[in-house]
Image 1 (cartoon, rainbow, N blue to C red):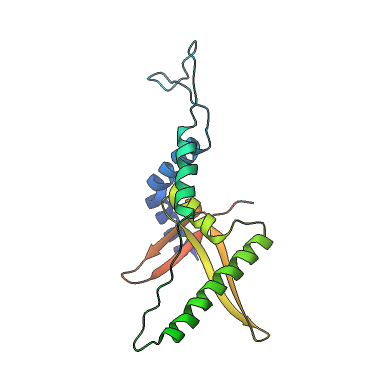
Image 2 (tube, helix red, strand yellow):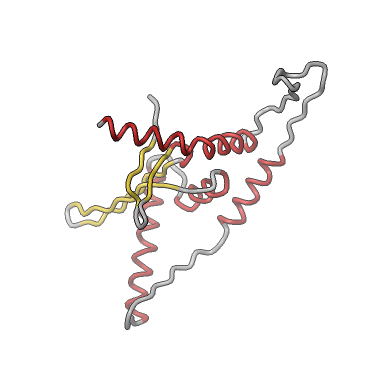
Length: 168
């Protein structure tokens, strides 16, 4: 267990510059009040500070453009007929629809909105996908994860491990 915790803490140090940048970006998008500071870091007095909403406006417009794109599923396979490809496309559409319904039931945004916001404001998106069969019913599930609180390590080919940071 100690080795696992050590690896996570090492990776958190590696991710720190990225997380710092994400925090600055989030403050801009959320219109955190701007304060002019002196060279020593102290807030300058007797000045008028103005917080503009340009970053938020840019973020909202960018997300709207990206989210409005039409998704196209492309199915490729050896000797796949159009009917067989259509079955796979329908299956993919049904999974996405079911995931969106399940996210809405838990008070979350739909998959496209979540992914768009994460990609535009965080630079990356993450989540845990799980599919299970219960009483002969296929149930796809997705847990959206804010990439600001996720550290992970890849091997040459695969994700080795991931750790989501939470507080209680």
